Amino acid sequence: MSLLSTIPWPNLITFGRIVLAFITFGLLLSKPFSSFQVYLCFCLTVLVIIGDMLDGKLARALKQISDFGAWLDIAGDRLIELGYWVVFASLHLISPWVALIFLARGIFVDGIRSFAAQKGFNAFGDNTMMQSPLGKSLVSSRFSRAAYGACKVLAFALVILAIEHQQLLWLAQFCVYGATVFCLLRGIPVLIEGK
Image (cartoon, rainbow, N blue to C red; front, side, top):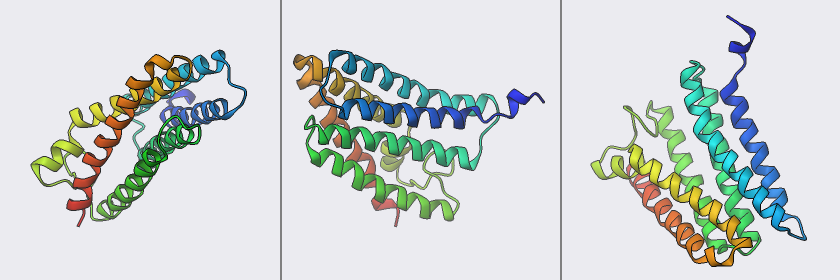
């Protein structure tokens, strides 16, 4: 076993994603704002997204799957996602209600999932806490998770680009509200079936 194989690469990628996201938040919140900052924030956001796709694949490929790594990935995802919504709301690029909806949904859904985990259930996979066909389809299916993620990714990227390119604002807002509706549609079954 080499020294390189003992390094927890997936967890390092997750930490790196969090750092890049906070650098992006700092750049977005700094004034005055330049075109360079917009494009840099866009590029950093793309790196954050690529990191999200990479950490899980790398964990499986290197056989470095752990409970801590799974928790860190989910916590990192939630922190990054909520950070974007809060920063966008504070810059008046989106309605503050969007950030509040994502925040409330995240707290309640993650809370219910932690109780389910104590009973031996997980959010996705063979031992999912979702029991109804609709719940499994909306919450646990790969298609639903991928579509929801794509909607958020498009929203984040387009909101940033709309700072510089106002003609993209309508498309950015469409993706923001699409992600918000998706957020609620995927959260409600967890609240109902979490009982």
